[in-house]
Image (cartoon, rainbow, N blue to C red):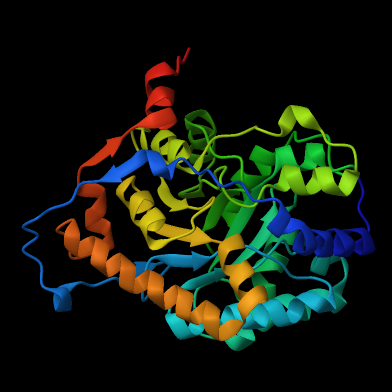
Length: 345
């Protein structure tokens, strides 16, 4: 369906207004248990949270994930998020940029992120239904280090004015992966990535997947509130973050993984890293702190995550976050049931 710039802008403001009301508490990471090591043989001062990603250094393997941009009201939000990312040394992704491609006056609400954080890792963001030309414009708008190509079929189906044809998405992703000068990160928006989808994406040239599992901001719930009459069939749809990580990691040659979807603490982040993620992100959790308590509180929260991750690394006998993926985990609950019960043909 055709969406005007004004409709896209209004929808973005609706999302900001409703996201706190539409949050799924379960990401299934409560089913993942790290194993305490009583003799860690680790010195606190040797623990190093830093990592290299997309050709740059991060102070810790965290990203403030795609949130907003477009209408003038969103500019100050992206500015504050960019400053928080700069001060804590983590990455940042902006929200979908289609609105600014259609309405050039809104480009500044996205570019402000690069102005406030000139040397940091910043990701552009577009839907998979866009062209290579649009992708290049989105990347250039931010001098971005990578492009998130979001997969939001479930959200579109719940959206009264949403798309109903998704044919050609994979071809678009293949063309972007082959022709953009920056990496493409295929990203679900909250309904998870299956093994089969990951296989398709890898075959199309994607080398980084953000699983975007159920457990965070619920865009079907948001669209249900916008439409008035709930679309009940999709209310519990999708794969959780824990299941998605395990599904994608089970490939013979898995891509690099970004874990998002209801990440609310450093412990959640550590569990995601233990399941094979390289980078862990949150959107709703960080945005809620910014809007409720301000920029300084957001910076303090990210710093607290960094300190808590150091504690978890020490108690699992790790020096770096990457080592967590080589430590034992115990899987219980519905995630274990999923792994035992799934039948593939």
